Image (cartoon, rainbow, N blue to C red; front, top):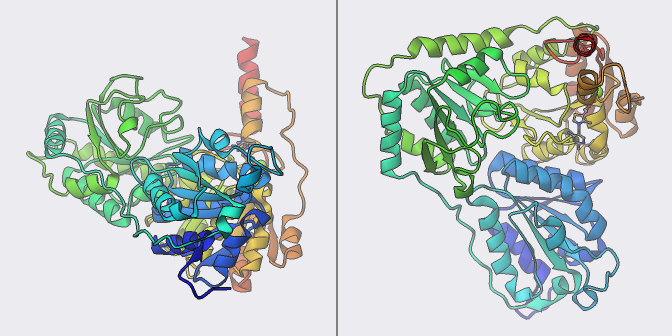
Length: 561
Ligand SMILES: Cc1ncc(C[n+]2csc(CCOP(=O)(O)OP(=O)(O)O)c2C)c(N)n1
Ligand SMILES: [Mg+2]
C-alpha cells in the first residue's frame, strides 16, 4: 500500500537505492525479519531468485560480483540465515569479489537481549568483510547503501554486510535517494610506468602473471596487445584462466594446482615477474615456494588496486598501486625500446603449454575426464560459462578446457566446495541465452545440490556434471600421501544423481563410458531442462598425472626407508 504523502518505507528506499546502483538481480532466502523488503520487491523491477539455503544465495551473489565486477546482492535473515551465508562471504573475501549481503535483524527495542536469532553481525562478520554495519535510522539508508557500494568495489574488492532491524525497515521516511556510485579508479603514475619500461629494457627472462579481480574484457584485450608488443610470456593465476586467451602465442599456462613443471621452472628462472592484479597467494605461489617472503629473489613488479596488498607478502622491486583495468590502459602507451631478445623463449613457453594440454592423459576406468574436457572445449560456444567448486575433478578443467572469453570461468580461488551449483544458477539467471555448464565432484555437489531445485524453479537449462568417484578424492589423496593405507572418513555412498535430477523435475542421465558423454550432453541440452549427468569415475583416476595406488605405494616406500 502506497500512501499519498511523499514518504517511503526504509525498505522501499533501500530497494530503490539498489536499482539506482544498477542492481537488476537479487538472491535470497526469505525471513520474517525483512518482510518489508520483500514487499518493496513486489512492485519494483528486480529479478528475485529465491534459494534453498543461504550459503547458496550468498554464493550466487558472489558469482554475480565475479562475473560483472559490480556488487552481487543477497538478502538473508538474522542468526541462522546469516551464519549459513558465511560460506559465500568468505569466498568473496578470498576471491576479492564485490558483494553486499543484507541481513534482516531483530527489532531495535529487543536488541542485546539475545532475542530470537539475534546475532552480533559486527562480531561475526568483522574479520570476513571490508565493512559490517547496521542501519538504525531509516533516513540513513541512502548514505549507508551508497557507502556499501563504494566499499565493496574500491581498492581490493570484497564483501560488505549490512544489518536491517525489522522495525526500522517498516518505518517511513522522506529521505531522498543518493546518486549511483561511481567505481573508484586507481591509476598508475607516469613515473611508475616509466620505471616498468626501464625494467623491461633490462630484463632477459620476463614473465607476466595475471590474477585477482577488477579486470574487464577491454582490459584483457589491452593486456594482450601489451604482451604482443613485448612478446611477453603470460601465465594466469589459479582460477583466473579467462584473463588471457589460451591460444594466443604469448600464453604460457596456468599457475594453479598441479601446474606444468615447465611453467614452474620458467617462473623460477625469470629475472622479472610482472604480477598484475593477483596476490600470489598460497596456491599460485605453490605454497609460497615461487617467491621469497619478503624477498626479493627476483625482480617483482606488483600491480594491485589495494594499497595494503603491496608489500604485504612480497617486497616488490616496483609497486604499482593501480587496478588491472587502469594499468592495462596505461600499458597501451609502452613500446619496446629495442628488439625483443626473448621472443624464442616465449614461443617455447606457448609450445610447452599446448603440449601439456593438447591430449588427455591415459586414465584408469571407463570414463576419462580429460577426454570429457577436450570434448567440451571443442563443442561448447566460446561464451559458454563453466562453474565449479572444489575437488580433484577440477584439475582436468584447469588443464584441458580452454576459456576463450572474459569471465567464462566462475570458480572459487578459495577452493570452497559447493560453489558450482549456486554459481551456475546465478549465471544462467543473469545470462539466459548463454550455455552454462556446472562441474562438480560427488562430495562437492551435495554441499549445495539442493539449489538444483532453484534451477528447476526458474527453468534454467544448466547442464550439471557430477564426477562421481565415490570418495572425497582430494582428501583421500592427501591421506594416502601422509597416512598411506589408513583410509578414514573419505569414502562416500552416493545416490543415483540422475534419479535425483528427475525427482526435482529435471533431466538425468548416467555416463559410464567416455564415448557416451557426447550423446548424454546433447540429450541434456535438447531436453531444455536443468540436467544432471552422473558421470562414473574410477577412484584410481585421482589426478591427470597419477593414480591413488601409485601415491600410496610411493608413500609406503618412503616410510619403509
Ligand atoms: C566447504 C569445504 N569443505 C571441505 C573442504 C576440504 N576439501 C577439499 S576437496 C574435498 C573433497 C572433494 O571431493 P569431491 O567433491 O568428491 O571431489 P574429488 O576430489 O573426489 O574429485 C574436501 C573435503 C573444502 N575445500 N571446502
Ligand atoms: Mg569425489
